[in-house]
Image (cartoon, rainbow, N blue to C red; front, side, top):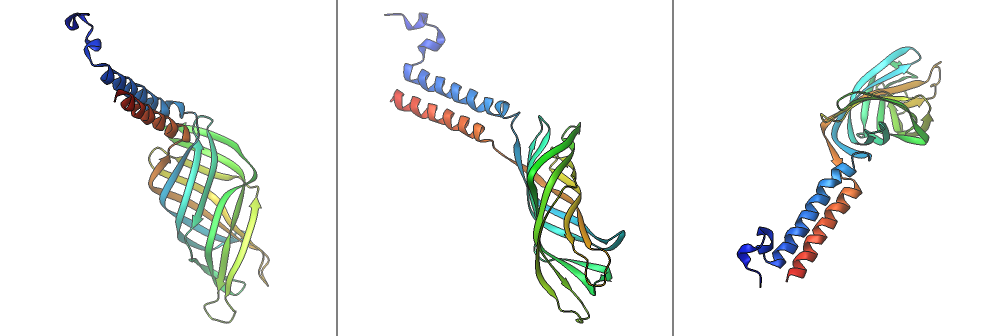
Length: 243
């Protein structure tokens, strides 16, 4: 029998302990390799707060502006391509926009709900890396849907309680993204295009500049989760074998 003192230090460790240590090392390597393997994969970020500066115009005239609260947004971004792969954001219910100049007899537009997301045929028209976590993107087409209302404060006209709308516009969504410091900005987004009211020559166009802040929370890629689970399984099997 070999003298324990003459054995290499690692061999002096009991075999069942060596099995566990080996499994732990493999698991650690698997978990460490996860982020490296996911570098080239798109990452989805969730933003927990936001606001939109909304502008309502009729033809070339601005008839109203407002700051509306946003209540949801996710962005899937691939910084290797780079490309804005997917996104969706929604306004909070019952946002109201007071019109400086009445339109069609109404002096308030209510954005009851509004959502923006990629439409069929969605593609990146071009993405520029500005340095660090800052990007400039142009994507199209996008689809806007939701419900709006209108109110006449003089009560001469009946309220428009809830009018649904949905349209796809080919005008590119222009966005400046800053993911690394927890903010996201989207500029010049068309939220709605409403047909001309009676007696009006132009329809209403509602656009928004959106700023999100409060921290971009990345959602782990499935591959990273699988590697972590595999590592934990190895440790469990090793412990079972050692017993």
